[in-house]
Length: 310
Image 1: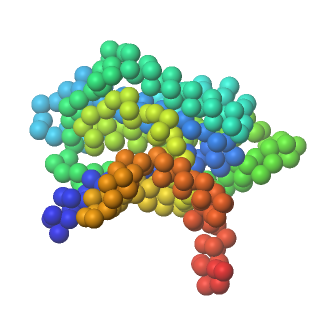
Image 2 (image 1 turned 180 degrees about the vertical axis):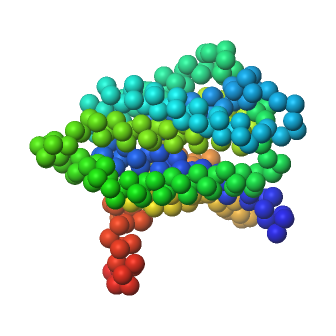
């Protein structure tokens, strides 16, 4: 059991973090906004935690105090939330592919800044970020409650007036506006909530990974997070959670499959190194055969009532 925890503990934590990153992308999608800005806020939250823990919150203790980690998460959430409002107000006037391009540009701007600023360590990044726990599996004490609270929050959000307004905007923005719903207000709200969650996850991840650099917030990451939502399910909060966990584990599964004895060398290399190619194929096939994702609200409701799902 100890060997299993030591081997797969870090992967389990990464899967739970991936689930929350999927939720951060799902929140603006509740209002029909295809935003790919989550990696930028994720990277920013990680940089905030890395800078604070290595330069501001220096401690003599063997382990980094957990209360200080919670403070870093709060600061990262607030900063990302404020930036989310500042970016969201002009960017969310766009929609569809134009919004996606604008948010990709935002991610690239943050990446270029992190590569050229001294405080972020430039291209090298920040190393030696202190650890609050002795082992990776102990991060469950932080990650599991945050994931549970995030899921409960999004579930409740879907079932109150705000959630119904977001759903109305997603289905028909002009009709929602005619009914007295302010689309800009609700779209910026959803975008900001996603930014806050991504920033908090970044703060945890910086300590978990022990190092942070510009590779954490890239266009590649945007595609991966998009896969979490599109294949997991874009109509219910459970979809991004399932998608985030499955597709975070998938690279490790592919890497293990690539080392299978007797496998052709080219196929082994494709399985180990062609992650984005495989993710791209999954997005194409998933949107064709599972247009609403693997987790669909109608199926869940029928199963809850004990009815047939086919």
